[in-house]
Length: 127
Image (cartoon, rainbow, N blue to C red):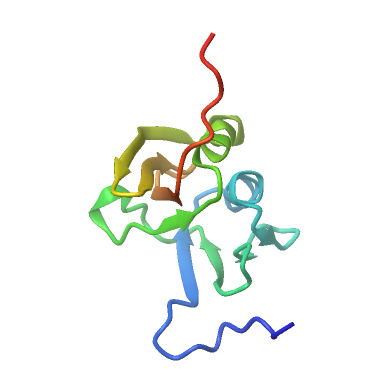
């Protein structure tokens, strides 16, 4: 297996995420996206190992006004089902873009985070 590296020329590999409550933000990204975080909640690594970064209490929350990252997931509905329980909010329900499904969320700090999946959705049956 090839070693995963953050040292890839031209790729995004480091993020600073505004997080007034670093512990809450760390919990959110662990619960929703399976990111790894340190015990104090300051540092993180995404689930792929390709992106590292820090939750920064001194950064202002930009919401949709700044760069909005989109996290690729295998099951958009299952991911969105974890958002509110982890302290976030689903702001735009899944909508199709070609063969993709896209949704928008806010993390506990108010950062806008897109979520997207390729292929058919596995929606739960309607009651």
